[in-house]
Image (cartoon, rainbow, N blue to C red):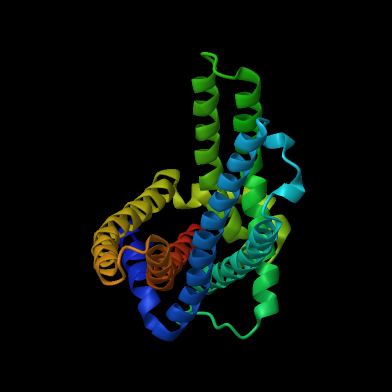
Amino acid sequence: MASITDCVVEGLKYPFKDINKLLIFGVLFAVISALSTFIGAKSLDIFRAAVHINEMNNGTLSQIPFSQLPTGDIYLVVGLTIVAFIVSLLIMGYQYDIIKFSINKKEDLPGFGDIWAMFVNGIKYFIVILAYNIIPMLVLVVGTAFTGESSVLPIIIFISMLLFIIAYFLLLMALNNMIAHDSLKKAFDFREIIDNISNLGRGKYVGIILFTLIVMMIISVAVGFILSFITVLFAAIINNQAFVISIVIAIIEGLFIDSYMGLFFNRVCGSIYRESIK
């Protein structure tokens, strides 16, 4: 049985086995990063416009007629959000394939030939993520709504965070179980999921995931310093155009960093499942 270090080291090397596919995957992340930056900026403009109208009319934000708002910007934000969600599904679909290749011990990276299959697999991937997080989200939202700012609120937040952590560890094995059997129902076969975790060993399962996340955190910090330097460099070159700099940095991060992290983490996840069924 492979050690924790072996799984992580193999995952770190995996993205470099096909740089072209790594960069194609990175394009999807770059699109998401650029869209997110643009949507955030436009949403802030819409909010500022709403506040300005509210101050002029001495009303509340909820009372502002839709016709008085910058409707063109609102439709643009909605449209780009839909596009970003579709691209996110393609990313999740490719991650589905990465895990499948890892489970089957394939050394190469998945291709991008069947976009429709990626999209469908992305939907299944998203459904499982949503399903496993719905209870912690409901506890947090409903608990916060009913307790307000009372002394019970910290307890509600603690319970919801604990549920998020438990859901996260179950979710990773659930995704693997679904992908291994190519069946959405297998993501909710809790007995099999828990048995797989037990087969690997609960301590080893948690240890591999935590070690992988720590490695990703270290990489992120190192990359953060580099991106900070690039940001300062761009700021000097293009006269502190903050929005342009944000877009450029977002594209760089998506193209090279997010794609690498996605390949690395999902490769390790597939390796974890492969070890659990030996």
